[in-house]
Image (tube, rainbow, N blue to C red):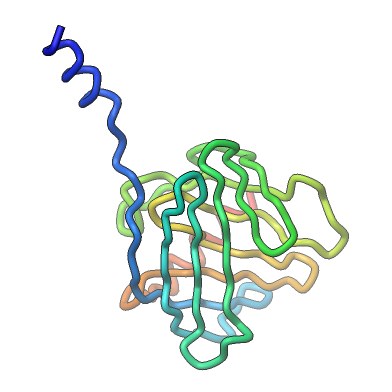
Length: 159
């Protein structure tokens, strides 16, 4: 019985997302052209059922962004808007994350609202689209600012 219980406990374990702080670069594209890049501190806080992803602009606190992910409902929240998973395993890139990115869309469409987002629990938000203003924002690891990678992600989102 003890062996069965130990096997069950080890078999059911998942690697929880751990609190961490690192640096990411935000690449801003307008009509597919790079217009700006800024460095952000990136912080993940694991608060039981909610994962909080904070992107903190190093120079301008008005540009800070916070996303919340409910692990049980799988709802991703950004400001007053909730996003639902639209496609599982939509994008993968082992240089960015060992886990695939899921595609999230607004639960309730809003005029001039955000476009789709790529997200996974370990990495956080990969992109934010402001489709009405034709801007795409990508969060990439510091030092991995690859313009080709950015364009590849943007093209994948257009499909």
